[in-house]
Length: 337
Image 1 (cartoon, rainbow, N blue to C red):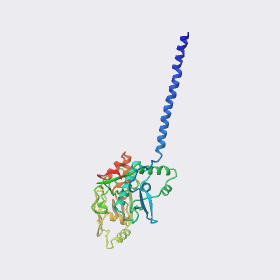
Image 2 (cartoon, helix red, strand yellow; image 1 turned 120 degrees about the vertical axis):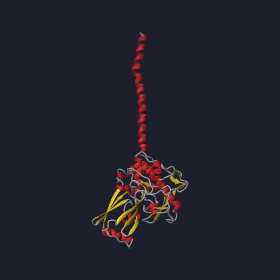
Image 3 (cartoon, rainbow, N blue to C red; image 1 turned 90 degrees about the vertical axis):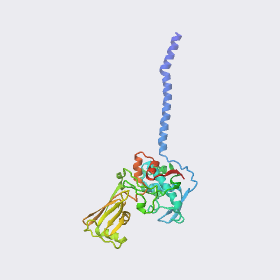
Image 4 (cartoon, rainbow, N blue to C red; image 1 turned 90 degrees about the horizontal axis):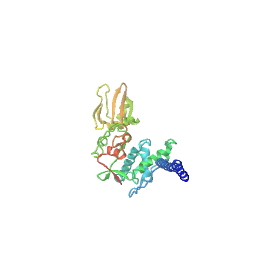
């Protein structure tokens, strides 16, 4: 009888008690995994810390063009302001990291090669001279309140995750030009500024840039306005709009921009026409319609170096920031300062 009772007790333990014990332990493991997942999600929303040991150029002297004051600022803090001023926070993380690396390289190049340009300052905050910059307070004011923290953390992470990284050619920082939208193809610097150019800056193509707002633009001016603007630069300018070829593009660059254009009695470069009429790019078509001259423009900026919308397009294709940099700058290395 006792044996029967003992067997019955063992059977009850196997059927009811042991499953409860194992279920409890399994639940604990699941809870640990869930907690770890939640921790990862929380960490993803936090900014990475600045840990790189800058042995040189820890700080820079920034000239504020409007106030003419010089501010001493830590390099990474300066770069937060540059990246947030130069590229939309809505762009892909890898595009922002590419911009951070390019901006750091451009800054270092300016310090090393243009030390006397701004007297006691290393660089200025004017995009037409150096590169754009905005303070954190001013940047946050321009963003929607709900997006401010997330946007700023995204910018900070892009800079911190590429800390100390610069682009070099033959062991020296490159002149890392960049622009808004290449219109599908970048430009060799010789076609923009003349000179012998830089071997690492060549014309390359990028797909997907036509999806961005800066890809196309248009300008219309009257024939009188057209003549007046050119005469301000070339007083001997004459044109007969009754002649069929009074405006004729003679030659294009490798990057599909206007290289030479004949207008009336003048032969001008596409870059000069861009400057005279404040066109977004030297990639344009010209048509005469009754009393109007119409410019149809593709791209935004000088077209040299990294295209910012092109970088975002490449990032959307799965390219990382190093891939993006090596696409726009040829035979370069990405290394620590």
